[in-house]
Amino acid sequence: MGREGEVVTALLPEFERAHPTIRVRVQQLPWTAAHEKLLTAFAGDVTPDICQLGNTWVSELVALGALEPLDRYAAASPTVEATDYFPGIWDTNRVGDRLYGVPWYVDTRLLFYRQDLLRDAGFSAPPRSWPEWTQMLAGIARQAPADRHAILLPLNEFEPLLALALQQDEPLLRDDGRWGNFRSAGFRRALSFYLDMFRHGWAPVTASIAISNVWNEFGRGRFVFYVSGPWNIGELKRRLPADQQPTWATAPLPGPDGPGASIAGGSSLVVFRASRHRAEAWRLIEFLSQPAVQRRFHALTGDLPPRRATWQDPELMADVHARAFREQLERVKPAPQVPEWERIAAELRLVAERAVRTDLSVDAAARELDARADLILEKRRWMLARRGGG
Image (cartoon, rainbow, N blue to C red; front, side, top):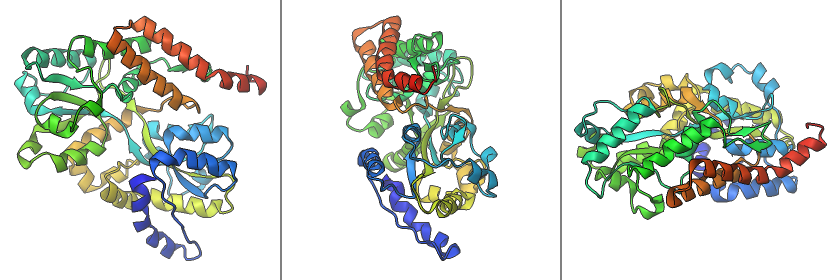
């Protein structure tokens, strides 16, 4: 899918030379059409043998019975070593007590920041906790002109709020994903912290689509902090002039009381249950999981590798902007592993935006989110009850 579907073809000749009886045919899909294409393929019994799958889609295809469990393959593999993968990323592929995918590349969110502007505000290092972050946001805002802000949190992006919520002890859904748990003390704490950034004027009330060029605005100093993902390392290196390259940096997300967790995202490799070539598909997964191959894949795409061994590559170790991602990946958590999660995440964004724009209280927003999540999860409760799950 996407850029990865283009790049993987450059890696396959080596695999086919090592396995002369296997030929791989790649079908590229745009991300915007991939979900529908996969569901249509499943309904028509024409699924591929192996597939790149967004981590949040795994549970949906598991619920359909479309994916082959991979536990026995992984247990016997000399290449796929579970302990070498970042635990939070590996767990995105476990549904119940079974493994259904092997991480291919990883994605998470952390802080991009202007270290020169942070120094101008009197701070020599990025924040490590919410109290430190609050102090910095307030300090930046005190001296910023009216058209500049301490942080950019686009209202059409739910990921920053989700990351703050995953830093809490309580899960976002309760009772095995049957009900929303947004009225928990942890989520209300995360939402309150998020809303305070707008209510204090530290973040502008805007969506990213209202910003003509987020990289240029970052370079102009229109905001100091920006919560984003690894693709922006390459974007900022390409888009900012050479004299501005030393002005920006990356840092792991602060947590309530110290270094915080973030989102476990990215794509994994899965095998479809209907495949007639499951053993061959697993050999391809093993090949693409080799640290040396992952290093080449990273060089071609900029995607971050999911294995600690791959991060020993000298080029990755020397990349000062990627280093923070390496640290953050030790502290990532998967989103709730239910097929309905993407719909619930869409409601999370809508309710959070409403709270920002209308001054909806934290408690009222949490109640609204629980009500919307419970409605979405109604069929899940019915199905679990029919299976005797309560």
